Image (cartoon, rainbow, N blue to C red; front, side, top):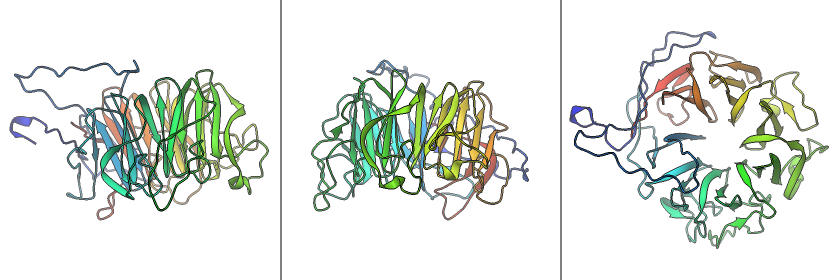
Length: 403
């Protein structure tokens, strides 16, 4: 912090009031901390804001959660949190050098990728399977490197060991780990080189509006609300005990139509069909007792009026049209926001109490967060990166993000 209350360009993410006074299934009263960009100096003119090349509205910030990592995109910069600092605060490092105009950001296992306003994709971290998508003869790069051949990206997603970019022309290109065909192409990881010549264009895809990457599969929705998947995907009629043996090229999912949005984690996928959340693939850890779908691989979660849906390791959350957030699945880490719950049994959906009107939702392995219309962020669950000072919040707590 500078004198006079001006915020530095580095993002500060601090938790207020960790003594939350509430348990046993009762919602925790949120603590009031504002989320906003840094104020301008009194003599400074507002910086010019060029519209994104795609013509789409870009959220001012977003949070990405994966495994033990928490990162945020704030004002075009990427900030990744560490376990340093006092036990009652989360403080970011300085922005990642080399990324200044990010419009989309995603975390995979040990790596991250950002799509820039200019259309490039920059990746950093582990490159054991070529997931940085660069002509890089190394297994790792902490400095962001440009993905080869991509100049018109408008969105990026990451799976466990691969990533994909949605381009402005509605096509998709993927790179990284591909032992199951999850990139949609024929390029395979070469252990001796760690070098990718150029990402594959997923064949047969056009007019794509949404993509989601799991551990060994990827799916996309088109403007006509059809779904195409590739990689290790459970298909209609598959024996669930043998589904992991099926690797497919990009294939239209005949019984998945009118799908508005996709999300994925590991082998599970979820989408929104007519406002209802439906899931397929490896959904057993997400399925409440007695839930069944219209087919062997489809599960009706029991949530209607949904706008967005996100998946964690063993739970999911959906943003509803009324601005509320509903979560389901296992609550052993408090990620459902409904107090302490023992065991790993998947629970039915329930609205998270104490979150004002939300406009977005993010889910990690043991944590969930919501962004409100007032640009505030509420999080609940177990903070995954705080290994030295474990912290669990069983109800929503506001966090501060400035940049």
